[in-house]
Image (tube, rainbow, N blue to C red; front, top):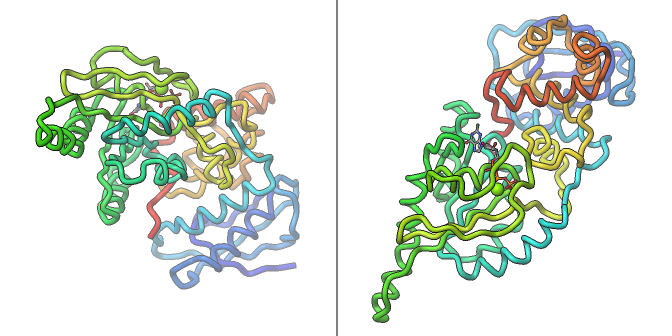
Length: 368
Ligand SMILES: Nc1nc2c(ncn2[C@@H]2O[C@H](COP(=O)(O)OP(=O)(O)OP(=O)(O)O)[C@@H](O)[C@H]2O)c(=O)[nH]1
Ligand SMILES: [Mg+2]
């Protein structure tokens, strides 16, 4: 069986792929279905491309014609492919007891807040934006923080900045590790909530400190931001999700109070692509996912992203750069570096990504 399909992300070379035929067939089909640009001149021939399991051992021979110009990366195709890869996997869900408790308490505390600061992970702003936040916040003043700005490129930052500006959303980029953006955030919080004291003055009341609640997904850097601002370690912070377990008000000077809160997630994550991205970025408990599955998908994502590509991956682990499916790649790394231990290999790949060893990579782009 020979299929002719188009793709926008494969390299200009002929690839022989062992394993996963289904995802390549599927991605290309998705490419054709979703691409906003006309089908490119690049043609893939899938020989013997019979549909099979995600990590089967079938061999594909994919040939393609060269394209003279590199087309702009197609994020719609990328997201569709990711959705397809995640479908056969065990669903990722994480809702420990302290999150349920926090959600209840947070809704109560929201009534006291003058401004809500929602902190997201700049690598995955969409996937770390809580679907219930709008309804919880209601008409309350709100600031969006994209933390971990050091982990994305300037182009990514600009793309998100323009997107949120076009939506009329106030966004601050910050670095919770070094403190960049924290003073700006503090100024903005006082500014947007300034009307509180204007109203109090009109009623003949003395001014009070502005109350800002810092909320968001686990491990996005909420506590670190507060610590950097206060220049003291007032709130526990560590590189794993679920460190903060209780709500805690702290004071910054005389005119600002900040609430540190445990990271929250929806009880059920319906978008499993988002769940995998949370796992990749370490924003969800490790026990909720299979490290090898997540690392395999990460490899497949990185292989397609123009800023990384299969060569960077292959060079890092000193294995040849033929286009492996993610699972095969993880196995190769295991053989090369960890005496065949796939779990360790998968963990290393994830940890290398989180440390920026493949460069700083944003896994999402704003919707068009
Ligand atoms: N590279 C980088 N690391 C950061 C940044 N902000 C925080 N971190 C690190 O991320 C880890 C998690 O930070 P926390 O402040 O504990 O995150 P949190 O949102 O409070 O996490 P939970 O309490 O588990 O919800 C820590 O190791 C921080 O040093 C940042 O902007 N850039
Ligand atoms: Mg915390």
